[in-house]
Image (cartoon, rainbow, N blue to C red):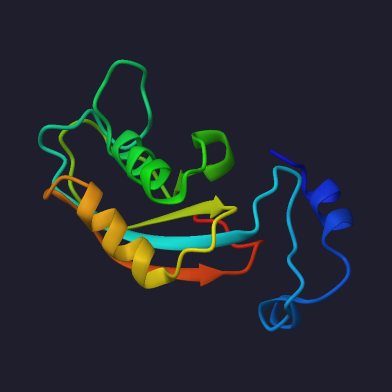
Length: 137
C-alpha cells in the first residue's frame, strides 16, 4: 500500500468535493479510483472469524470474493479492510469495512451485487462512496 506521504504527493491538486464533481479521473498508486465504505451484518457461526486465513472460510474472504466478482478488481487492488476483527463463530451487527476499486459501479449496483454474491448469513446493510482518505479503522 502507498504510504501516507506518497499518497499525499499524488493527491495534491484538488480537494475531495472538487474531485467528486470533476470529470477528470484521479487514481492512486495502484490505479484505484474510488473508495467505498460498507456496513456489514453477519452471523459468524460457521466462519473462522473476520480476517482472511489461507484454507479457512472467513467473512473477509467471502466479501473479497464477492467484490472481485462485481468489480473485476483483484484482492490486492480492492484492499478490503475491516474496522476490527471477530473471532471464529462471532457475529457482528454494523462491522465497517472499506475497499477501493478502479471500476465505475454505482453504490446501488455494489450493494445489490454484494448481497447477491454473499451467503444469506452475511449482509451488506449499506454502501457509500467516501473520500480516499477514509479508513475503516
